[in-house]
Length: 315
Length: 249
Ligand SMILES: Cc1cc2nc3c(=O)[nH]c(=O)nc-3n(C[C@H](O)[C@H](O)[C@H](O)COP(=O)(O)OP(=O)(O)OC[C@H]3O[C@@H](n4cnc5c(N)ncnc54)[C@H](O)[C@@H]3O)c2cc1C
Ligand SMILES: Nc1ncnc2c1ncn2[C@@H]1O[C@H](COP(=O)(O)O)[C@@H](O)[C@H]1O
Image 1 (cartoon, each protein chain N blue to C red):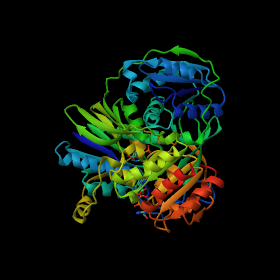
Image 2: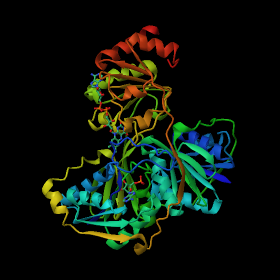
Image 3: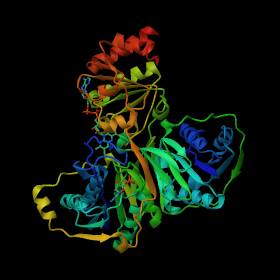
Image 4: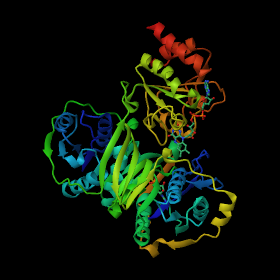
């Protein structure tokens, strides 16, 4: 039994989603190989070779893989599975993994198991359905199991302690179906939402993007990432990549502070596994209070600056 | 250009689903069913492309039970021209649906197939990608903007870090994200007109497709419940509790 983990592409270094996906691979048992794709990724491949529990790193370094286009990545993975005899292919549940893994599975004529949160045995997994309102245990009878891994559900493996061999794989080609045009990446000095220890999220109650600096000031005090509800994103207060929820990012920080968010099930789906949840909302009936560990019924425009000041005081 | 749109009948997004006592699934009897919200966005996009003179015909497809005809009628009332139901009573799974859609795409020869990015019941987020793979076409997933040109379509995608634009060779598969558009409500006259639009029913065998589920659901359980928390009276009390009780700051 050998698992192939498709690493989250990056030219900057090893990404957290790769490490949590490796956490899921470790639960399967057997050998673990990691496929690192992209262009100019030698240093990322070297860093991946240091990760605990990795037996081999495969690198596919090619111009046509620079942007992780599914049309070019999937055939490469399929060839590796066919020639390498992999029993499992795991990818992180990032927009990259969700885009590529089903394409791989279909080319192998196997089902894909989305967003696994638990490994019961090598063929049986748990995964949330209906926005996390139910947890299904599913069994695959396919010869190869292709799955995406929910990062918040698995421990990241240690980034050091391993010494895997690095092997270049060829065979990538441009499928000629799609081309990368441009990317608008939101720049932020703050931690990434999916790996932040603390998140401060704003909803429609923020009223305008101009009020988000209130949350940013609070986030700065806590070293937190800033997130948002769909309503805040749809209204244009903040960019789309801030969205937490069923159809946005799934997060599980130590502390999640929901400000002016009502607590729709689709939002809760993305944050209810946080360790401690704080809600600030002026409506004491807001559903968010049913899952919040600490609820403060208050006008956010008064409470948030007060909270920021109080944290400043304490040092 | 003809556009094929896939629509799924799902439990309405406002319903708080309940897990069945015997752990075999969730309660769907006497529960409000609707078109998957992402599929409404898919239909809307197709209708807008037609209104803009970019599309000539919109064919909507659903794979599911006889009741999915209602979902197809809704799509027809929104502006689709004709509907196909691949009727089945088995639980549909993405690979099987993708195979049925592939068979129909080969028959209908659309220039574009639009699906939702995710069905809000299984939360799979797979079918569009699988269909693109089976057809050997390009895929523009999680689209927030779709701009067709001659022989290509530019798709802006919502990705983890922000937005990405790709150019896809046509024919292609697109899956919708929430901000692609705001779906219209069907007007009463259009609902009446939709009753007369063609709706054809086929079965999987007729398409030469095997819809047998590949994944077996062994159990469906309630997620762990969070213990109810407390209300705090002031910001000071909140900070004190976060420090001494929760110890997270
Ligand atoms: C298919 C689908 C997918 C979805 N996916 C997601 C998703 O991934 N993530 C997501 O978040 N949503 C998602 N939604 C939307 C979701 O259903 C809700 O509409 C959304 O979460 C509501 O956002 P909100 O809580 O910010 O806004 P509202 O529900 O409008 O709540 C605003 C809250 O702010 C409070 N408030 C207002 N003013 C103040 C003030 N001055 N001080 C304090 N409190 C104040 C109000 O009391 C209210 O509770 C999805 C919906 C659909 C149909
Ligand atoms: N049974 C079905 N009938 C028609 N379309 C479907 C069906 N299942 C999935 N789809 C389409 O595929 C998209 C993604 O679904 P899924 O991969 O199940 O999350 C949906 O938004 C629909 O557009």
